[in-house]
Amino acid sequence: MWTKLRRKDALARERVQPLKPSTCLRCGYVNPREARFCLKCGYPLTVEAVREVERLREPIDRFLSLLMEDSRIREISKLREKMGRRCEH
Ligand SMILES: [Zn+2]
Image 1 (tube, protein in one colour):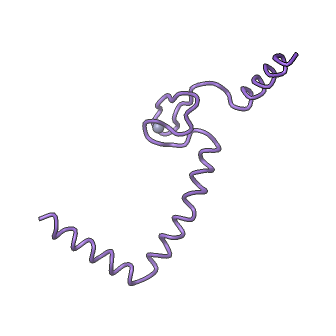
Image 2: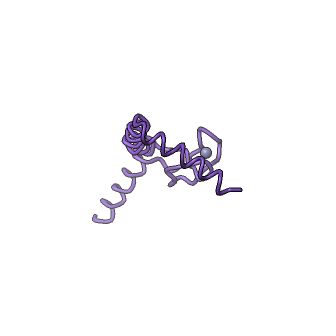
Image 3: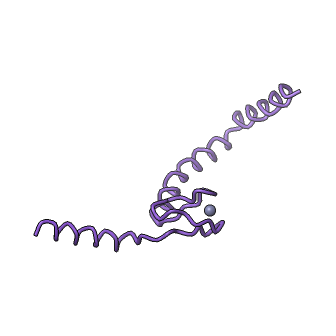
């Protein structure tokens, strides 16, 4: 009886997350079914993964655009570029 219930539970879980390989929409790579992101290019393969990426990217984008609005930051990045070039040679 108990095992029967557990089996039913496992079947229900399978329906929520179909067990099939997920082909990447961007590069066409066939990923293992448990992969949430493409192993080749990192493209999100599930709806949850897409949401996760968006959730993480949004505050970073906001932060970066705030930074770039600051003229001092722009000066610093220009200086860093110059210094980097000097160090290379
Ligand atoms: Zn890919």
